[in-house]
Length: 160
Image 1: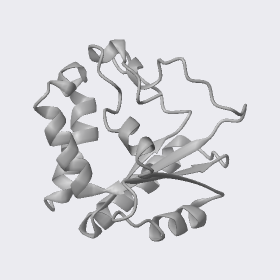
Image 2 (image 1 turned 120 degrees about the horizontal axis):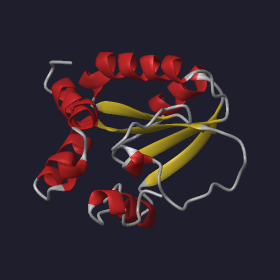
Image 3 (image 1 turned 120 degrees about the vertical axis):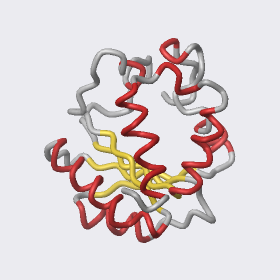
Image 4 (image 1 turned 30 degrees about the vertical axis):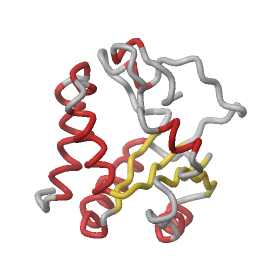
């Protein structure tokens, strides 16, 4: 669960903004099938109404295929101020990344699932810049910080 204190992040929440997003009805969850459904979810997302849309599918496919699709989409669509983040059950956390999956949360279903988080790129980068000032990223392995944070900033600045 992203909105609870995480011991791997010095007691900070995995996502310090998640709790307020849920509480203020700024997060929306939609279910879909394959990539065409994801494209429709992206097209229908309005960052003026919601901070995030979480698209969920039980159509897993392979992690590397989803990762490549999301990466290419982000590179091609940064100019539209939208950004996708992928969660896939086959994502192999390395040592030092266990904070991503080490929690007590259990889903209400038994099937594996893929989630794609759809957000405003500029809002996401603004929030991560604020987190930088708190020391939030100090526990992140350098390669994770680079791929999750710095790469987003490069995309927004046109260097992706």
